[in-house]
Length: 94
View 1 (cartoon, rainbow, N blue to C red):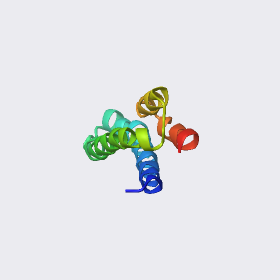
View 2: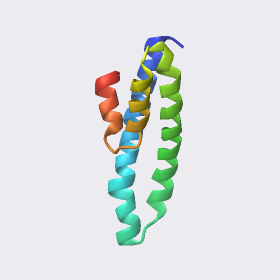
View 3: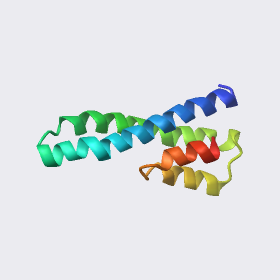
């Protein structure tokens, strides 16, 4: 895969991972704990888990081709743990 193609794929994964995290935190979790409807957490949680793994693997694959420093990779990986982190990565690194 070419560098630009990898970057675009990671960009989409980053955006989807960030959205899934926000949906999980702001919609699915309140539905589970305030309205006793845990189904959404199972569905969104699974999607978020898959996207999270894809995000981490994508960041590792892009590490060399984008010529990121180890500090940049660390920030990018830490941003996956923050609710709006993937959107920051999209603007700053992609």
